[in-house]
Length: 249
Image 1 (cartoon, one colour):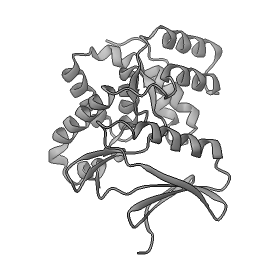
Image 2 (cartoon, one colour; image 1 turned 60 degrees about the vertical axis):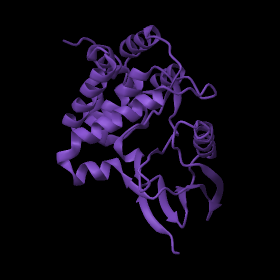
Image 3 (cartoon, helix red, strand yellow; image 1 turned 90 degrees about the horizontal axis):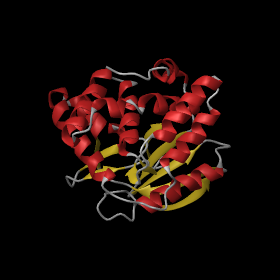
Image 4 (cartoon, rainbow, N blue to C red; image 1 turned 30 degrees about the vertical axis):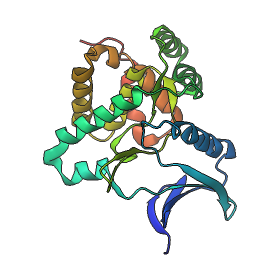
């Protein structure tokens, strides 16, 4: 069976090769980041309550690093949302339930979300000293939790398997910390594409958990600033618009 292209970007290309997925990174991509992704996935895949495609190995292809993972037959939740807009609320309910299921797990060997975020804030060039201090102070005052956080939880990273199970992929940003910080990042990731979907997700999460919306919103300036560290031009304007939003109605 010939390799089948699944996704391609400037930094990575993903293929299906039989029962495996090969994720090839661009030339010069840091080895440490490749191995970190493999390590995070390997730690999370041991949690029996979750469906996480396993890392099978890593290699090089024409001098470029590559990860080999299990292939899961199915469709992404993002594809299903686009094809069935009348079922959006149903799909979003499933997404929130899955996120809550993830947060109910523990993975004590992962990095701490708060420490990881603090490091990101120190590297963001767009922040002046006053903004950086304000954000770091706010982050330091947030409750310290150790819940499993995905870090990039969005519909494109959820596979609705042909077997009916929900699989979660791309755990490179996984950490342990405050679930509302993870929810705030998902909100931003959704808002970058569709603000209405982001609001629906936030409303369902807060209703299901009894969490005050303003508490989750309190994380948005922190998470938005940390997201700027990825230096994605298409995200810059929206993220910067959140940095100075410290009070909510």
